[in-house]
Length: 429
Image 1: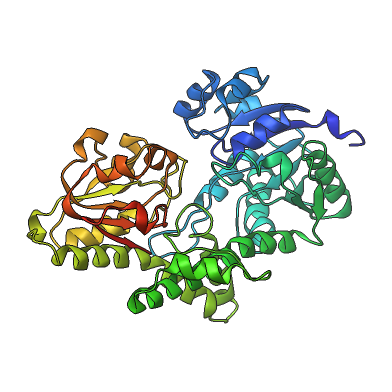
Image 2 (image 1 turned 180 degrees about the vertical axis):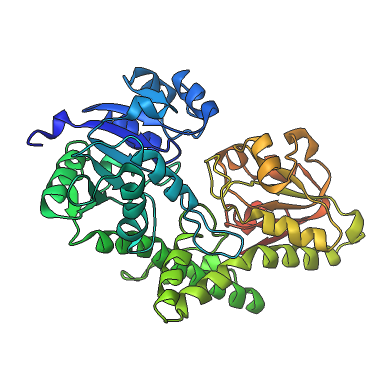
């Protein structure tokens, strides 16, 4: 197709990734957004995005159509698949969402269509898993009748600076003509430009190592934090000193969850194991990061044991349940690890989140979020997620929730020790 502006678009999956892509594409193309959830479709048609990734005003100003009906997306020329790729209980890649999306797309395909996957996968999934599904269901041949592309998502939930338009987009196609077509589409909306990957597998690999690299670096910081804690040294002070060197990489310790950093490494390691290689550094980093929540809970209990409060009667509050600050996204949060460990000690924590949906928290984790006024007379308060709502009014607003002599656990070092009055015990990771 000589003129990319003539492409008729469909974006499959309207979550944290798909919706920003769809709304941006609709600025230049005839674009339809598709999602299997009727609730999500109704919400978007009403002009509201509960994820907060697209402002309601921008959503309402868009000329997009949202649907969950396959017949309304049939015969389009360009399909973008942006569904999640989670892991299962055994920490193995769960390809069911992307496989189901492929079956849905296949029912709508006609000759000449391009199907671009944005979902994070291990190298070869697009061509060896998704392609055959498209062929089987549609009866069309990849590379002859329909054409595969891959362009890994780089959406950072809650980040209003690094947006879909301002991040360089990696693009790939199964042949040169498809690559040109995919590059033309994305370059027309992404002001930062595109990078043409040599192959689809290269693009898949590039995505999966982006977050693996971050995961391993954070794991190092977490391991250092465990060492420095035993030395009685505050990790933040050490990192500020080391950070004065020009080539020191600035990572911080903390809970590592979410739909990317805490998941993507398992996609790479699963593929490596298929090939007979046992990853060591990557899985070691995952092990360290997965243990941080339990360590925080254990540290809390040790500090509580030094107070006069009987442990089983201690009131412990946790601020934050989402996987990171200032987003409502609960996927793969590691805060429940803290709660689970506290339960092992006989303590049921009181958990509040300024951003999360209460029904979703109950459904996802079995956690009943409390109201703000329920957080009072606490023997320990764990600031697990640094939402702006928790720190905007200063330390006193938090300390007022605590009983005399209580323990304050500052997971992300949001406060300084000097901010905390001497009557309280302070600790940070």
